[in-house]
Every structure is written in structure tokens, then in C-alpha cells.
Image (cartoon, rainbow, N blue to C red):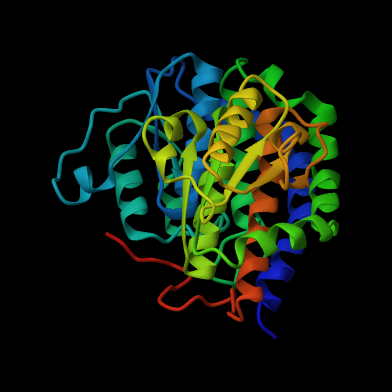
Length: 351
């Protein structure tokens, strides 16, 4: 049956997250033991869904360390053969399979330049893990559906605890120990609630494109939600910072372009809600995901709620799960199989 594999893997997410939360104290110690005495800089290497996890990691690590965090351009190393000086830097290399050749290559070369490489992957025995000083493994069974689901949310949890280990700057953004303990249950509740997703799918199915909006510590949810929709439904969905959307792209809003607005209680929620309302003024239908403020007071808006007991840094995880549900639900409603989208393979072997 279409979608059987991806729906099964989505259903594993509460257990995956519960295991990571249980291992958090030990992982904190392992990470801290491997860091340079003084971290001089921080950078990230990723592609695809891992790139969206890296966006979240960038926000978290900047908050944690007070250091601007950069994304490595892999082609600078693999095609232009220029390897940056990264002695005593923290380098976070993200690949769910741990086998993307360019990610492994760049991580290996940066380690050779003195970086402390942390691998975030599902496979602790992968080539990427072999290049790293520390491997943070999602530790779940192999993901067989092409769209990454449980490895994405697991990786989001891992980069969050990585940032906790590196610096104290995000302590107020996760919700602390209580939020980590509640995380699996919040995700399970989202997976159980289908009615709101079905209503949102009815907005998406008749329209060939959509815009996904978020900001700050929820921004990765918009990027990942758009990517999942593109991968599975073969429709043009774009993810934006709500602030960036106002700088020109707002003009594409209209009756044929739904806005999917992701938000959690925190400093940027009002910004996301206001941007959604600006799109409504131009005719866009709205799907609000997460906090009620994203759809409150908008005529005809569909709300896809998420329990607001988590801090923003962890709330992005159930928001991503909701994006998965929207993408898979839309794809199935269109009569396509999200398990194996045409033209895609599970591992994309860029160099």
C-alpha cells in the first residue's frame, strides 16, 4: 500500500526521541570531553534534510557560544580544493546515512586541519562516523522510505543537546529537563491527531504550490516542511523566514498560494503570525501549525495544533512532524506513493 513504509517510520519517532532524551546526560559528557579547551569557531556541513537540521544547529550554537556560526560550502573543498584553517574549531557534519561522499570528504579534510569534528548520523559505523572525534547517532533501524522522517527529528534532538553541551546560552530555550521528558509524548499526540491534518490537506490538494513560513528557532520547520512536500508531492513548496518573505516574495501571495505558518510560543511567534496576516490581505489561505496565534482570528484558516509545553528549541521537532503529516497526506490524496518518489534515491551521492 502506498505510504506504508514512511508512515511506519514516522510512527517510530516518539520512541527514537525518548531514547535520545534518556541518553542526554551521558552524551553531554562525551561531547564536552572532546571539545578544544577554547573553541575558536564553529561551522556545519550538510545537504538535503540534514541541511535543514544544520540551520537549526546554527541558531542553537550561536546562542550557546556567542560565536557566529557558518555553513561550509562543500564545493569549496571538493571542487576548488581550498581547505579552510579550522584548528580548534568545532565542526558539525550532518548526514543521516553517514555515506554522502562530499560530507565525509570535507569532514575528513577539516579534521586533518585540527578541527574537532562531531558527526550527527543514524549509522555509528558509517564512513562519516569514522572521520569524527565524536559521533551522535540517532540509533534507529535503517530508514527505508526515501523521505527522511525519524532521522530528521532524531538529528534535531541531537543538535539541541549538542548545543546544551557546548555552552549555557540555550538553557532558557529548550524548556529544560521537563521539556525533554515531555518531548516524546508531545510528538506522539501530534501523530495521533489526524483530523486537523486532513482539513489542512484539503486546502493544499487543489493548489499546485505553497509557501512555508517560520522564524528563529522554528525556522527549520518551514524549510523541512517545504522540502518534504516537494520530495513527495512533486509540487513547488518553498520555505522562508517570515522576515525574508516580507522582503519581496510577499507579492506572490494570493488565492492560489496557501501559506503554512509554523510557530511556537517565544520571541518570534508574533512576527510569523503578522506575516501570515499580510499574506491573507493578498488573498492567501492560511494553515497555522503549532501555536494558536498562527491562525487565531483569520477567517477560514485551518489550525494544526501542537502542545505548547516545550521551549522553542525542542518545539521545532513536533512542528517538523506536522510538516511530515501535511506532505504525506497531500501526496496520498494526489494518488502518489510517498515511499519512493520518482527520480529520488535514499542516498544522494554528491561529491
